[in-house]
Image (cartoon, rainbow, N blue to C red; front, side, top):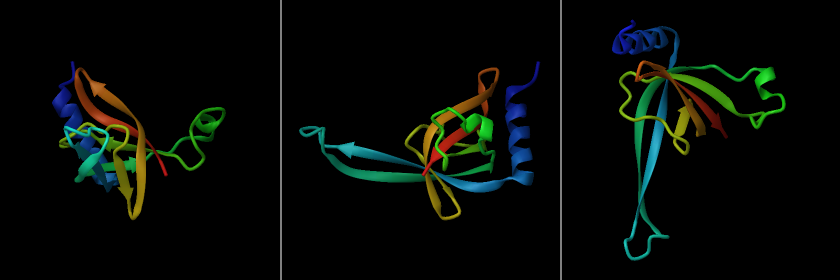
Length: 120
């Protein structure tokens, strides 16, 4: 049986060798208790992630809801303080992309990698 933590670390090592660093940002909004429909403030927290652009194939795009400008990134889960979720943003160079969906790749109960479907 593979050691899940070791598998996650090996995946991170491989991505660090041939991958790129991106910024994953999560914005949290706070609302007033007396007016919950109003956003009082929002704070963004940025996380550095390591990954690669593993774009969709033409076959995957055909007859699906994947937009022509949507992309797919593979990022390492090891060392990441959060689990990516829809609504987060991924910055690739200066381009800010919105996470549409997240597909984890697990070893036992440990997340090793995440496929991020992002859109502009």
